[in-house]
Length: 496
Image (cartoon, rainbow, N blue to C red; front, side, top):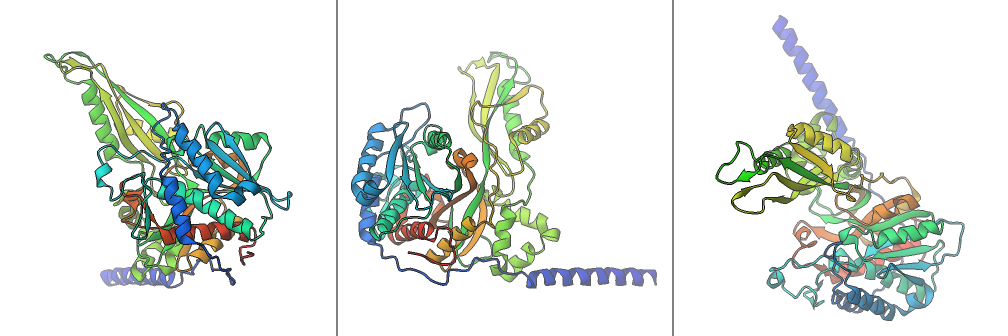
């Protein structure tokens, strides 16, 4: 009788549990942002716009490192090209050159009582990895147009955004449009090496002028296709927060001497053990906003089994975390990561060095700090002969999370749906670095989104080989910025 009662009780618990799981799964409500009821026709001459972008690729505005001077001639050439390509912008907006190579445009609005907005992008590009030039289908700086694409370094990251913004403003000025609130365009020249001489100087100038922004919109997340689990339709993810970063120097000490008489423990051996422990013991995984916000926004459109899992995070979170941890791209959403990027030790084959060190690039999840990661690493390594220090000038904590209930977020989401009516819109976490942190103190909200259609096959093109953008996608980028500017604070309807 006791066993029957026990089994009956277990059966009842299981039944209640299954009922709760099914109830949660079947009662998920869609949080998809509806598209506007009206939509203006925006006729873009795609071929002409593509030619202008292709010619911009030919300016080798490469950033290599902060120790090397900027590619001055290339930046000056690009500045002149922008002036010639967009005469209405030239004649209407005020343009200032900041710190030699960055650009700040001001488009004066009609209502000075409204807070301005800032559209950010960067003119610099990363180098082409030596030895990979022959792997490109078209030379990386030729600006080739072929097979429906513009090819070359910077097409995706991120001259398409610069030209998309300017094409949109040229279009709007031609139709007699003036924005309600002032619009700033901030085009930095060194984002790929930190933005300290570009965006940081622009932000300093705006701060000196007392500028307070409603929001900034910079590069960031994209329109994903087949990337998020369990969702067939595209998802446009607007970044509302950004991981921080810190470079740590891990230094091991040991006995030096002649290679013929090695000690039982060397500095290099000690460093190797420490780095192995670091990789084997990552920071704990957790589901936190804004990643949870992203899944909440798309959950209703997931297939049944995936929706069942995400709708019952209270029970199945360990399953979700294990699945997300399988890929680097999703593992970066659930924990602060530590990548060993530089190792140095020893100067001669027969000399045992007294010290060896490594640089560890840490990307901080919102909620973690550089101090909490260092504490974790010290516990994991547990070796008094290992020192962990922050490389000077490389500590940037994770950003605040912007407000998705704001009218500005809704206007961006609405503009996205106008251009990509087949896409869901969701907030998300930017896992890479942008120029946005330089503007955080000036803005109420900071958003990170570039309307690129992106499949898993395209991810490797960022900073990689065969970077390209589809011509029709570039036209969509132009339309997106038109809607952002003319929707302004009225996300329910296009006004231009």
